[in-house]
Image 1 (tube, rainbow, N blue to C red):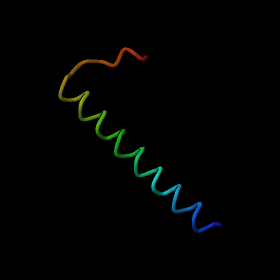
Image 2: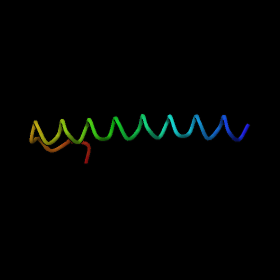
Image 3: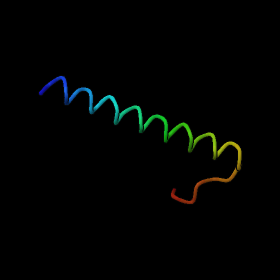
Image 4: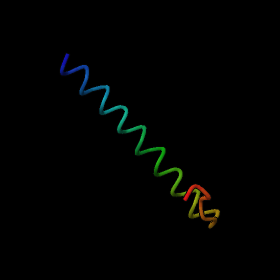
Length: 37
């Protein structure tokens, strides 16, 4: 149970990091402030 849960958490964290990095790169390339703030 613990091993499977940790594996899922790691994969989820990796996905979040990848998405955040992609969004940051897109923001830098577009040079447009996100209207979410």
